[in-house]
Every structure is written in C-alpha cells, then in structure tokens.
Length: 302
Image (cartoon, rainbow, N blue to C red; front, side, top):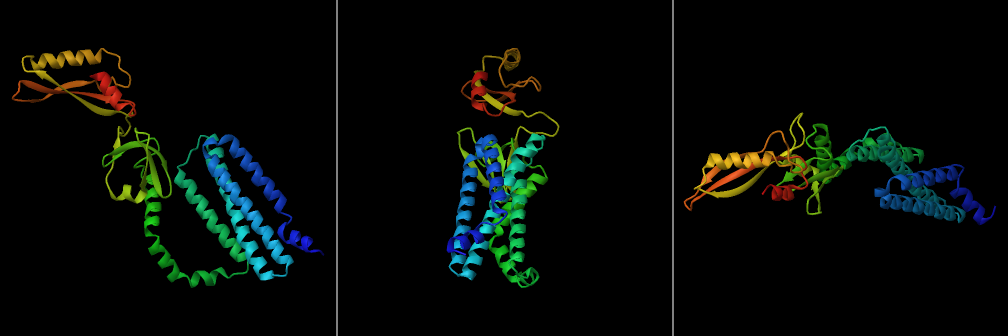
C-alpha cells in the first residue's frame, strides 16, 4: 500500500462522505433562511473545514508510521468536527424547525442544550478512545471544585439567565431600565442579556448583574396591555384659574388624535406647584402605547 493510500484510508472513513454532505446541506438550508446568522454559519463551516484538514494531517502522520501522534491528532479533530455538526443541528432545530411550529424558545435554552450536547459528545469520544470515565470522574472532584471556583462568575451568569427565564422577570421584547440606561430586551443568552437603546446602542448586561440588582420593566403590568405613563410639564400664569386650565387641557388632548397615546386610561392634567414668580406648574399625564417614540410623542403633546 502506498503512502497516500494509507493516509487516505486513515483520514477518509466510510462515514466521512455522508457526514460532509449532511453538513453542506444543513449549511445551505440555514444560509437560505437565517440571514441574520450568516456570519456565525460561515465561522462554523470554516471550523469544520479546519477539522477536516486536521484529520487529513493525521492521515499523513499515520502513513509516516507516527501512529500515536496520528491517533491523538485524529481524535482531537474528530471531536471538533462533531462539535460543528452539533452546532449546525442546534441552529436548524432552535432557529428554523421549532419557530416553524410557532414555538420560539429563549436563546439561553438553545445555548444550554448545545453545551450539554458538546459535553456528551466529548465524553463519548473519550470512552471510544479507551479511557475509563468512572475513574476519571472519581479522581476529578478537586479539579471540578477548582474549576467551579474559577468560573463562579460564568456559572452565576448562566444560573442568572435561567432564573430570569423561569420566573419571567424579563422577556425578549420587554423595555427595561437599569440605572440610567433604558432599552428593549432583544436577546437573553447564557452569559448576558442584550438591550437595544433608542440611541442605536446595544448594551450587554451580565445576567448575574440583573439578578443581584434592581431593574425596572417599563410599561408592563399583569394582564394589561403594554403602556407607560409619561409626564409633560408646563407653566401657566396664576391669573388663569387652575380648574379652567385643567379642563381646557384635558378636553383638547382627549379630542385630538395623537399617535401612540392610549385612550384608556385617559390623559389627565394636575396642578403640581405654585411659585413666587406668578406661575403655576402643571403636569399632563398620558399613557404611551409604543415605548420607542417617547420624546417625539411628548413633543406632539406639547
């Protein structure tokens, strides 16, 4: 048997062609339907090609009679190729198949299932390589404790993300305010929560931060439509009777069709203060139904 024949036999097994065809088919399907995830797809398929090249290198090592190095190299890149396949199947199931059945799960659910599949695949390959997993698990308690201590922030973020999802503290689409930052929750991942602000910014909050600190969910109340009360302040001279000012302002607002202003509860005007300069300070309170155009709607109210 020639050098190249030995290399090819070791590198290209009976399952290699069907597996590669499956990877290409899933990639093309996801590339067609998941436009927003194309960069991730290209990274994944690139990693798969690297793993194929690594297996080819293992074939060369095997043909050169470097059997131990060939076995280790091949096993490493087989694990990598399996991770790629799991990643593609995760994208297909959670971002295409389940949404087609009107079942959209949080991103953190996808991340956790995929990570569990990674660990299971890694353990299977270790077992296939001849390692005794029971002895490894029995002697790794100290290592596990050290790793858990070193990764306590990461574990806190994972558990925080799960807790946020399980108790429905926040959901994708909610508007939240953390300190002086407010925006719309667009994704809850295994490590962080992404919030898009009105200033076209994306703020990344570690899940553990949201669990440890208070935050405000804007415009949400149980069994009620999304609406957020806004205050528009204005001054009027004390020569105008407050009851008349309140009546006129409420009548004008209630009979004017202004986008994103709720009709129920109705807008109302209240006298808040009087100063020594001859002015009364009023507030018009209304309910905003779309939390994006807050300042523009305030402007139309004024």
